[in-house]
Length: 482
Image (tube, rainbow, N blue to C red; front, side, top):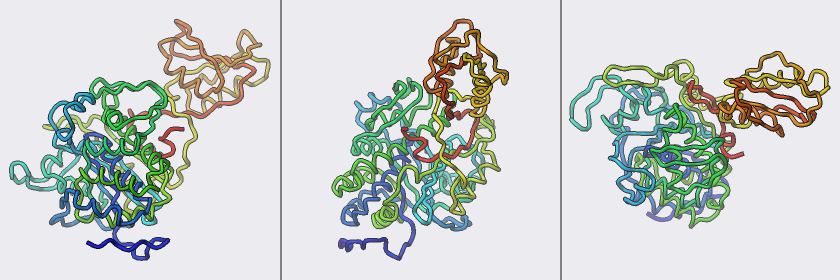
């Protein structure tokens, strides 16, 4: 096929179907990450000549075959990104190093809808938990050939029974959002893509350790290579929130990948852009409508895309442990809250129309879980009450009854805490910049703040607490490193 002519200085008028974002495949968010990365990388606008050659490397699938009664077409583009296990394509040494033992599950371990707005200025990413309670339409089991009536299952099992087509049909039935493109990515593509970009930087407010994946990160900033990034997005056994906290880490990783791709010079280097694109597309599956032409068109339109242009949310959960006979425990969506999110996708609107990026400092323990008694250690009238009100306003569970400290000549604001509540003390210290902390055995669950003459302000803090299934919309620059 001849190389298309060089593109004009601005996007052509014809703006047919929207190009694809990218997809994912494996138990990790790598899938989504990898997928979205290609879209961002395409922002270089380097032209068809650089990426046309990779079209033959894409494994094609037809997830829309014979589909009827589909949702109405809306504005913008919706890409279903799924991740299926591809560990058999990774070397034995890497499988051992990154704890990728066992057999592939042959199911979708990660499912996301990526919506690219019609004006190509916004990307909305909605995470659909793999254990979501789902009701699949009538279909033929691709393994046994048996004809199934509509029945309940976990969302990730739709792929097992009916492959990409049943996965798309099930998601469309649950969300009433029409899927325009289908993308799948595997472990291999994910790891190599991250390495091609030179790694990504991740920030964590607390140590992350998972014996299942081998992840072991102390609190702070970390530059992760492909294998380490895979551990980061796969880990489910760091705390009691399993997939929900993992999806939050996946969102952070996506933001970090976007930041890396847009700031590393990859977009300005046609050869590097080609190498990364070939790495990603060499191990994906996509619908026939996903091709180099659309990729470049979308990249051109999104050339000014940045982390703040993306917004992330997980489908709101109404019930965390919804039992289904023969299936086990599932996650039941909150019908009303979920519908608001999917309506926004259908109507091509922001997930949170009036959302203002939070400037709050991320902490490990939510302030709502921390009991605080404030004492005024100075002679300044009303200082204790002021601090009590300010801490309460940012979420801390204050007593509401500040007192005067025995010592009224305190120079440095001090936090005292029982050693058993050291994580809570760190969250409180983040809200009181410049304060000092001291452990006091036997103090109990209530933390004490003794205000000193150096007190300046109370900073806002927040915690990503997935335990309650909250659907907080965040932008890419919020979930990335400060």
